[in-house]
Amino acid sequence: MTKKQLKQHRLLRKHFQWGTFGKYGNEQLKYIFLRDISDSHLLHILGHIKINNKHPYHPDTILALDNELLYRAIKNIFISDYINVEVHKDTEEGIPGGYYYLNNGVPIYISKAEYYRLKRINKN
Image 1 (cartoon, rainbow, N blue to C red):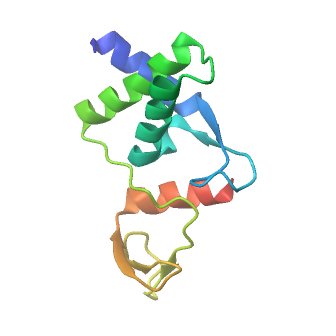
Image 2 (cartoon, rainbow, N blue to C red):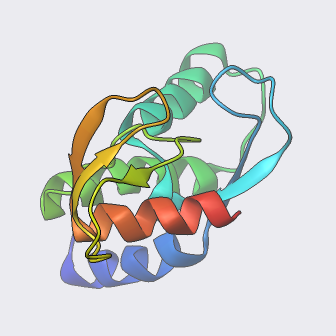
């Protein structure tokens, strides 16, 4: 990607939204920004589109999804698969970033950026 393409994609990923029915297709339709789609979800979307080819997607849509993978590789961005996870912080200081407990009780470490990303996704 050229610098111009990187800049254009950086703007696109903030506004491009993908409709999803959840990981297993049994949830209510929800729209998420391209920048918030987990890596595994993004790969599944592209695999479904390119292998099954059941749904005629606009070439620009496929290009945006492909470019998102490339953009993440260039920028060393990893989006973990925490969709629909309720996060509970186990500290009293209230500062984002630190150890949290997932809704199944498993402790994980979440960075400040990941904390705000989860908060933004769970609002929708």
